[in-house]
Image (cartoon, rainbow, N blue to C red; front, side, top):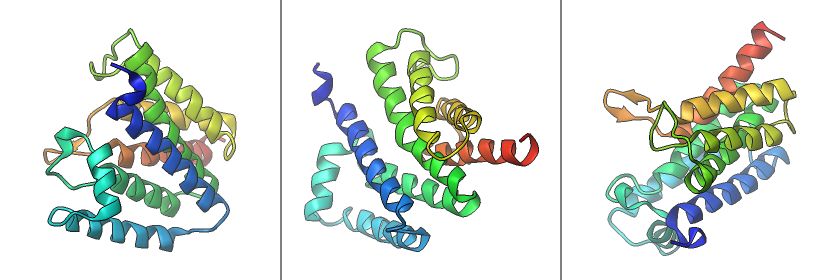
Length: 199
């Protein structure tokens, strides 16, 4: 199977492209927390609406980028959780840590998946569906981009923490938390704790 034609490859590329566009809009203060919150509410509204009606642009994305196992669940669930995770990071952490957390979300998970799926040989002891090589490359790449906003020690700690939490399944009352929510919060918390208690 050609990787470039696979659904997961397309999903991960869209994840990165939308993420880059979002972080640039946030960095250059084109959008802030209020606008992100409004986008979140609109996204949830249109997601529920798409369960009953075919909405032109949204239906195209759902038809072409939604995983089969996610059909019937909340449409666009991954992007909704990415927006929630990013918004929480912006509210909970100082600006540079929040931006680094969002950058880690943008790059860590998709790079980890793409490298692990195509080049990975060593299964993770935390999740047999994932590979250690993917986690390593995901942590390195996301650290490099996070360094635009925080000290290298913080970027590396945030990325490693994010990759750890990306590889464990967290459930609350039998509801699995989406890694798009967990990654920016885990990365931001690690960086915040280092700044607060170590540096």
